[in-house]
Image (cartoon, rainbow, N blue to C red; front, side):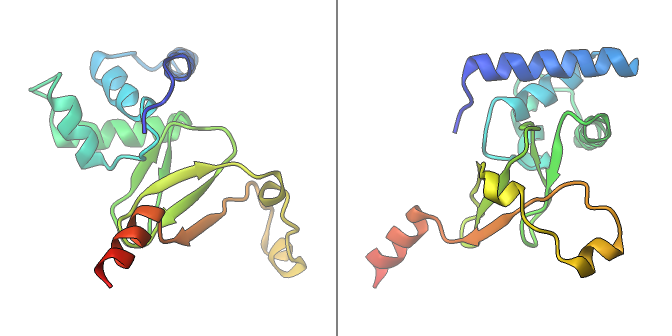
Length: 153
């Protein structure tokens, strides 16, 4: 699913400012890798990002994509989404949100919910250390997979 142009532009401006603040060069490759994540809600893998960016920058290497993703994650402009046992996927939506994950096809969708954001931390967990954020992942079966299942039976 595509992200609205205005949101992509907002994310790109945030990326630009974060790079400048950190003293990180704003290279063409970094911009294209970030743009590829910023323009979609599908949470692409490094390999998917590589294939798409390679259409615009044929000389880019998979190693460059991996190193850039690591840099962008450390910079705080993307987050790594661990989906079941798959390869890591990446998300440019840095606002507080949670994930709906289809355990059949791997679809990942963002959702926001104030109640999930404000879960009460059990005392035992609080005693382990300071909780900095809460991330809820709903492991589910998406409507498309449900429909295809019902069509097969």
